Image 1: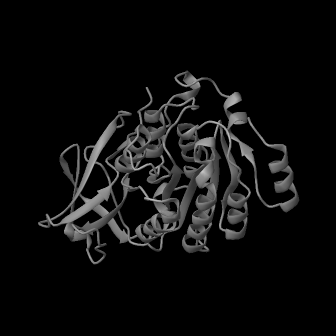
Image 2 (image 1 turned 45 degrees about the vertical axis):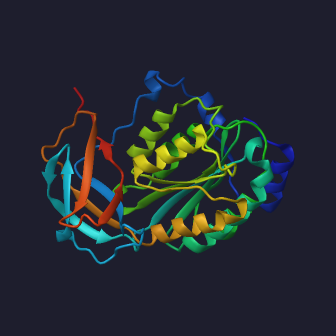
Length: 315
């Protein structure tokens, strides 16, 4: 894995920031598609859904109750077992920062906006981690509620290399966000700051998405493309956000990044959570579509992940 010697030395002097190379982890595992990379399937006896409700103008609606919602799985109605507001549940947050050469001219704005976001979102019961990615993904600060450590990790980043976005998503979800159990007792979110133009990953876009779905992770994306011309990378950023119940932001200028982060912070403060036990319960290892609606309120928009992967019953 690429490690700039000066960067490592600076971290060693500063202390408190853990550096862990994804590439080292990858070297010990087999190639994608081999038996060692078979999808992880947690046992599903309850399905946890984290979601946001807004009106048509994007304003949060926070006064709804359990009886206002209807849930269906594969178009079959489900009974909601538990419902609550999520603002008090501990947050597990992964912040993925593109450090490739393609964003060099905008990098200072990214660092400033990311540190402001960390200080505004992370509370005592919450934890966040920082993953940078260029040619490879790298854990530069492990899960912690120490905002000073997180801020130092962001400020010490330096751009250079390719873009391994999909690897960064896969690693953060599989090796970090899925660790805290039981999963329904935590909110899991990911913020990606990138142009979305992956050119160095071992894993595919869909493999990265599947791992995010298995980790019950909502993905928020902030594009660093300020050309005002839609790119394939922009489509990738929309894809990850849309499939997981998040939002994609496209700031017009680098200096507008702060507003995008503020919008995500607002989103994280205005969430609902519910869980249900699937009927029928199918341990088939397949993807099951889930839909949440507000009864009789076509004027409201529910933003949630579109489904989950069931456990495969052992033979």
